[in-house]
Image: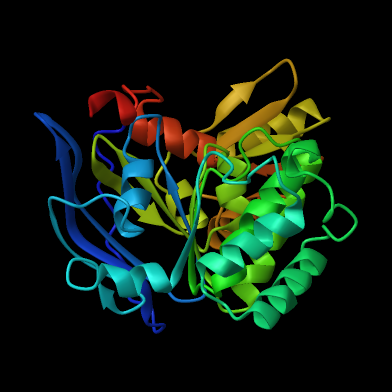
Amino acid sequence: MLSSVMPTPIQPDPRPPAVSAVGLRKSYGDRTVLDGIDLRIPAGSVFALLGPNGAGKTTVVKILSTLIRADGGDLHVNGHDLAADPQAVRASIGVTGQFSAVDGLITGEENMLLMADLHRLPRHEGRRTTAELLERFDLVDAAKKPAATYSGGMKRRLDIAMTLVGDPRVIFLDEPTTGLDPRSRHSMWQIIRDLVSDGVTVFLTTQYLEEADQLADRIAVLDGGRIAAQGTAKELKRLVPGGHVRLRFSDPTAYRSAGLSLHEVTRDDDSLTLQIPSDGTQRELRSILDLLDTVGIEADELTVHTPDLDDVFFALTGGTDRPSEEAVR
C-alpha cells in the first residue's frame, strides 16, 4: 500500500447532492466495517465505490438504501434524512443487489406486474409501465416465458427494469455485471448510461475496474473501513507513480544523444529505447519534444504510458481481500 497517499478532498460540484454521507460509521461487535466515511454524489451522475472483498461496499449500499441502520453519521438521500424519514428514502430509490431478485417460476411480464402491484400502481398504469419497460430493455419477445429460462444478461436487464417500476431518482447497483459475459456487460453499461442521461443518479459497486473507468463520473476506493482516495478516474491515476514516456530509436547515435540530453532516463540498449518518468500531461510531453527538437533529435516512435485503475487499486489497498461482510455479523 502507498502510505503517502492521502484521501483526496471532495471537490465542490454545482449540482445538488443526490446522496450525501458525513461520518458514516458501522461496526459488528468489535469489528469496525465503516470508520467515518464521507461521500457527496451529485444528482444525475454515476458514482463507483471500489474496494477489496470485505471492505464494506455492500454495507454502504445497505445502509444508504435503508436495509440496515448506521451506527452514526449524517446521511441524506434525495434530500431526505435517512434516520428521520427512511420511508421517504425508500419511495425515491431503487436497489439491484448482487443476486437477482427475479422470480424464475413466473414470466418476465408477471415479475414486472408484481412489482407494479407492490408499488400500488393502478392496474392500467402498471400494465402501461410494464409494457414500456419491457420494450426499453428488449424483453418483449421473452415477456411471456418463465424467467428461469432467461440468460444471465436477460435476468439482469429484467432486474433493473423491475427496479425502475417506481420511477426512482437514485439507483443502487451492487456489482450488477458480476458473472455476465463481455457482450452482456457492455449492454448493461449502455443501460446505465441511458439511465443517467434521463437524470437518474447511479451508485455503483463493482469488482471490474474497467467498468468504473468507463462509467463513473467519480470514484472512491474503500479500504479498511475508510475512503483511501476519491476523485475522477484521471485524478486517481495521477496518485500512482509509474507513468512514463517511451522513446524508440532506430539510429544508435540518436539514441545515445537523446539519452544524454534527457533527465532521469532508463535505457534499454538492446531495443534502443528510452523511458522517461512522466505524468502524461500535455505540458510535460511538449517539454520532452521541445528538448529533442532543440538538439536536433527525432525518435522513431513515441508512446505515453499512464497507470490504470488496476494500479490505483493495488497501490491503495494492497490488493488483499478481507473476511466477507456477512462473516462478521
